[in-house]
Image (cartoon, rainbow, N blue to C red):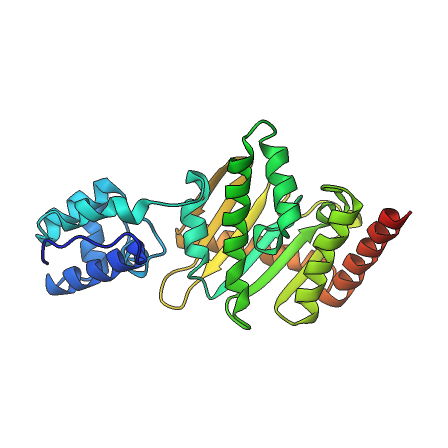
Length: 278
């Protein structure tokens, strides 16, 4: 391992993970063997190597010592930790970009990957009513940048479950809502996403506490991200992730089938269009 530093402009987390794999294999250690003195699982090391987990400085220093890498990881984990997203969401957003499938439950707002520019701006302004305009615009730009992963025609698979409140909460007025819902119906019609809606009449369900995102990868363990207002936690413990998958399965079982969900979304969008034209 030379003393060369990573270039922060060229996917530093992925590069750092690749270097970690090379250094670990050079030292003749398995992922589990490297994880043991760090008190983390082998799957956690795998996530660091795949770039789906951020390497924190305390781990970097210990890894340098264990693998005899002359301070390489401590020097470079700062570049890999830089993110344009809020701290509570940064790890999930960066893992999202590497996922092969994303399953998401949204109780109140359209998921970020499906938001239009106007909808995102209205949501951010509601969250931060006194923020300078440039702050809001930066947040909107970053949110729209996330959605570019849907430009691939097949990957990742995106399967969303909405609470009916997502459709009924009139964010930004009827014209904005009609546009936002039509954007979703277009993606459904193009067979790019799967959407189901849990109607109000379904009553109590398995995820009434907040939003949920499940991220699956080709070469790393699945992650679960649970988010609240300004908070979020990323889980990799297999038992916890399995429990969240059960929650998602229960949500899909209680939701309207995709065809009926599309019909409901279209009906609500038509209602907004009529309201806007009145």
